[in-house]
Image 1 (cartoon, rainbow, N blue to C red):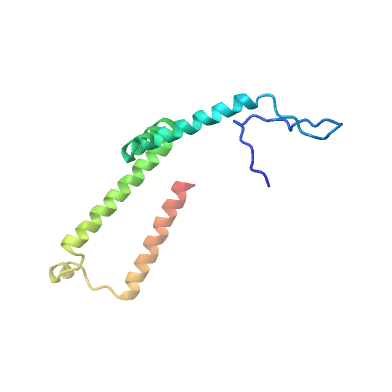
Image 2 (image 1 turned 120 degrees about the horizontal axis):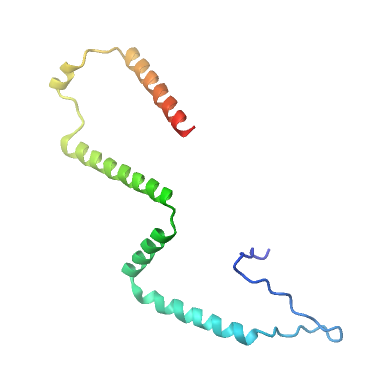
Amino acid sequence: MPPKRSAAQPVVAPPATTATNNVASPPADTAAVAPAAKSSTTRTSESRGGGIGQTVHSIVRHYQETTPQRTKLLDAFMAFLAVVGALQFVYCILMGNFTTEANKSEFPSVSPERAFADYIVGSLILHFFCINFIN
């Protein structure tokens, strides 16, 4: 199956055949197409020598020019969440997440059934607010 044509590609008519010998005649603009292909190949080979810094710079520039503001806002929020998650991970590694005897005395003893019920109610409330927010 031939690849799909994009809107930017011009539609080229199939080569015309003569009724006498059924040989396709070459398109009239063959000479014009060949130099354009050579110049694009030369240009891509020249741009390959820029290195990683130039590649990152072009990606950032393309992102800033073409990405909608709403998507940039979502990306910033996702970056914020990643940074907060990394900080929490570092905190757990450095400080630990075990409760000490002093912390245990601050909480009253709770039965496992009560803890599970609290978890279910909290999950329902959280999901209710999330569903309402997303709509």
